[in-house]
Structure formats: C-alpha cells, structure tokens
Amino acid sequence: MSDKLVELKRVASTLLDDLEAGTAEVEGTLMKAKRLARLMRDADAQRWLEFEMAGYPSGFAFSSLGTCEKYVRAGRRVDSENKYYSLSLPEIDARCRTADARLRTMGSLMQSSQPMENYTVKRATEEFLAGQRQIEQSLINAYRHDRGLLSSIKSTIHSYATDVFLAIELGDVAQDIFETARRDVDNFVRAHCPKAAEQLIAINERMADHSTESRTAALTTCRRLLMTVADSLYPAKTEDWKDTSGKARKVGQEQYKNRLLAYLADLKHQDSSQAVVTAGLEHLAARLDAIYDKTCKGVHVDVSEQEARLAVIHTYLFIGELASATVAAS
Image 1 (spheres, helix red, strand yellow):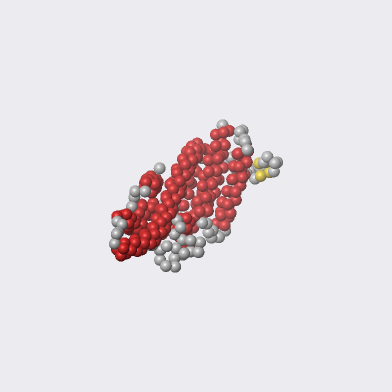
Image 2 (cartoon, helix red, strand yellow):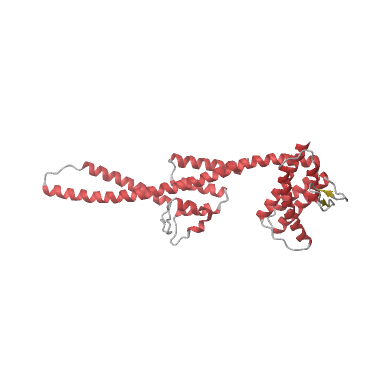
C-alpha cells in the first residue's frame, strides 16, 4: 500500500474513532475531516467542510456542493424548501454549551427557592419563578433543536468518513486483484512477447502526460501492443483462417484481431469463458482501430482521460485473459 493510502486510512480511522467516542472538540473534528478531504483530493468535501467551519452565507446554493449536497441535507441543515441554518458548526456547539450551562444554573435556582410566609414576597417569588420557567422552557426548546442539529451534522461527517474508509478498503481489494493480474501479465509477456514490455511502459508514460495528443498516442500504442502479442502467438499468414462457423478470415499482418481469435480457437482447452474473451476482444479492437484509422487520416481525435484510461485497462486485462487461457491449455 502506498504511503498516501496508509495516511488516508489512518486519518479516516481516527476521525471515526473521535466521532464515535464523542469526546473530540468540534473544531478538531472538522480540521481532521478537512485533512481527509484534502488527502482524497475531494474538492466538494473541502468546500462543504469549510462552510461548516465558517458558516454559510445568505442565498447559498447547496447544489454548488456537488457530491456533498447529500450530506448537508441528511444533516437537516437545509430543508426541502431550501431554508437553512447559516451558523457554523462550532457556533452551534457553543450555543449548546451555553444553553446547557444556563439550564443547569436555572435548575439549581429553582430548586433552592424556599417557601415564603409573607404574602407579598411569596407572590413576587411565584411570579418570578413562573417567568423563569417560561424562560427555561424556551431555552430547553432551543437547546433541543441546536443539540439535534449538532448531532445530525456530526453524523453526516461520520457518514462521509465511513464512505471514504470503505472506498479505501475497496481500493485495497482492487489493488490486490490487479496485483495478481499484473503478475500474470508480466509472466506471460516475459515468456511469450518480451517486446510488448517496452510498449506497456510507453503507454504508461504517455498517459502520464495528461494531454489529448498523449492519450491518442497511448491508445495507438495499445493497438500496436495487441499486434505485437498476435505476432508472437499467431504469426501472420497469407492463407485465410476459418473460424468455428466456417467463415474465412484474413490473418495477415494488419488483421491482429483475427489472429488472436485464431490463437484462442486453436487452444486445446476451451470453455465458456472464451466466448467472453472473444467478445471483449471484438469491442476493444473496434475502439482502438477507430482511433488508429482517424489518426492515419490526420483527423484530430478528442479522447477523454477516462475513456483512454478504460481502454488501457481493458487492453491490459485482455492480455491477462490471454495469459489465463494459455495457462489453462498448457
């Protein structure tokens, strides 16, 4: 696990412990939550927690909080009509502490009042106590509201920390899965097509540039990578190859997809999973070929970073599937 993931997990875990123990100061809890959001590069959460720390301005649009709007609404800070409480979380906490202290003082005062024999004094005392009871009830109502709001908002911070912690845990599982796939691919490439290793490195370097041109170049290299693998597993032939349906397919230098299909069909061990591998190859090759054809014509190809990343992952996983099929057939 990387140092960043270790730190993320530690901060999320300690934040959850603080919230569940209920002993941490509100300011400290918010600062720790902001640190977690910063480590996650979560701009929405950083913005949300900043407002929780400083308070919300008038006319605030909660939709601007993006993915964190759900936490604000779950915390009952804003209602269905978009009416909201603008006080910061530390201010709400301070109001709760002040009200609690006043109620304790008033309770002691009411209990210490002694019966009076003098009628005038007695009446004045009763009127005073009646007024104090009204004030006390008003304080109790305000305290209950503020205390409930404080608990609800802290609960949403707990929900955010829990979501982050689970995402990290899921990332750990995914990392283990991909680590296993990586070993399979590395062993397969080393044994069958070592030239492909250089192309895998080139793909990674181009993706790291984060530009449209580099992403297009990375996907073009993905196509050449599959061609290199096909050259090793099923070298180009001049005569056609007939698939399982009897259809003749060309297996020349450029027909890398057909050559990979031929390789899979020729494996001694075949099962239903090969149909899935074949379908994945058809989809992947169509995407990579479309980009390759456009670049050959000099047409600008606008590929999003997410689209390019998924195509690279699919390419890598397909080689992993080839490796598994080869091992199963050996």
